Image (cartoon, rainbow, N blue to C red; front, side):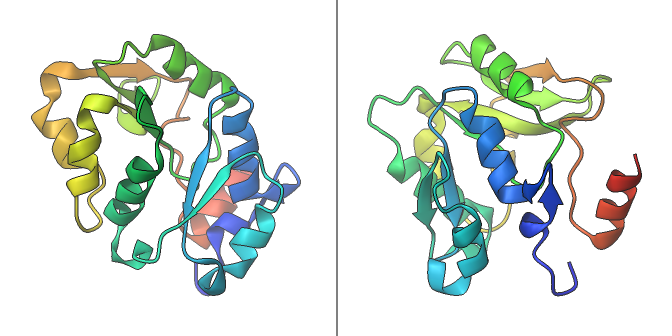
Length: 180
């Protein structure tokens, strides 16, 4: 974001990363936040001070999303039935959206949020049977390869409007979103 940290932009009076944690935690589910180590991202850690989440330092996070996914999988309880991947730069996913996905989770299918018109987005909820594959990913591809190879288990979960697609990466994205 040209020198600014998009996750520290203000949404509903909080830094986006803290607002996202509050939104997810309001479902009652455990929230794990994968972060660069505190020494390299002190403002993010400060923004999450006292947040209802387990903060997970990921030294290799600069190598891509896979490092964060692997760290999150390693941090899960052995009996954890699933892992929801919710990028922190998606401010339109609501507590109700997350709760809706959790309620539809059967422990077998991979649930992928879509826009109201069916375009795939986030969050994605992976069952425990996919944890080893998530932990083995490398680079910045996320779980895309798993989604493609498990099409028979992939279930779309429509969310309102473009909740599953709104991703704020640039100052222009933020300006457009704030004007809405």
